[in-house]
Length: 468
Image 1 (tube, one colour):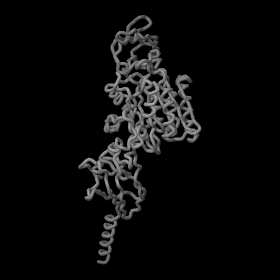
Image 2: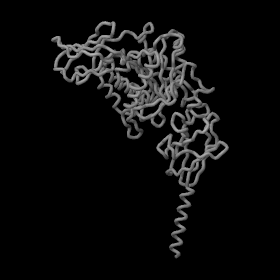
Image 3: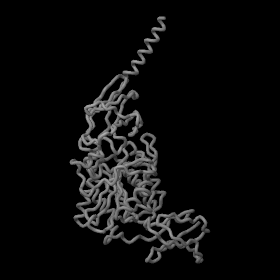
Image 4: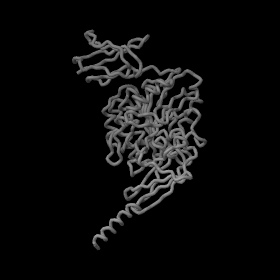
């Protein structure tokens, strides 16, 4: 009987320990502009940062307070609050980036109290916003089919966009939270809108900037096609495919863009610099301009340089490399390795700009200061009298050809007449395609061919094609 009683007591003690060894989180206040009826979610290390986890909805306590009881693993617990997704994550007092909440849990009962100061999607356009009037949120929840996620997309339109019929180059930029608005930035903004507005006043043609928010916990995964065993990665191909196949066609269809590669750029810093270099090298048919600021090439080892070296030049291009003298020396060394790889790939010295200001740091203030010079160098000569500058010489790649080839210096969406003719005059292809379509060459015998393309009302352009 004593043994039985002892066992019962032990079970009751264990049950009581489980019951009371919990972490209780109380939200003491929510922003006044919280939409009525909104559910408050918590995401963190305990649920793989699932921002819409239906099992992690806080319970209303009355008086504007909410609570939830968790049983996390012992150790450091990090978390954030959302209204069901990362676009509606909590913000700081200015509506900007709020660092993770963090507490240490030792397995004993613990209660912590936290206020929610703002919501990023509701606070960024408020009175604390520093964004210029010609910056807008194009979509708070733009769908990324390649990753089955949604993301906020920002849009900068030149000051004369609404009063002219001009078309403009387009620059795609990452980490949009930090580009235009101090209220949504992590540690200051790039001031892209202020810089471009000032350059426009000085006579610059203007440029549309499309800013894509980073995905928070998905940022490292999306900004590298290569996996880092410690930090993640591996979704860069899908992210670039989203830019090229989903976002760019939408922008070109709904805004007055100059959609050709010579007037399309990609730019970012740190991990954004890594994915920008990859996107440029991988999709030279889309991007002829790239701004590579303080790139985190270390994340992927030798892969960035190897990738560039093994993707031959497909057309004239410009790549602007920037690092700070006060950053680790490895940043400049890795950047130089990639720049040298461009030479291996066939690019000339004039197509690269390499600068390391001695006072530069891995920081938004530095990138903001250097942005105007980078933009001007990248897009110099790209636009003439409101139109895309004359295209470079037509070429095909790869050349010698494999089973498929693509065209360079042709707008991706435009329809063109295509012919492939052998040196004996035999017609092997005679079709109408779009500029981005691959061309089947797998059935061509070994030899030399002439590829001819023609747009309506224009002359034929030609390129040599070798099939080995």
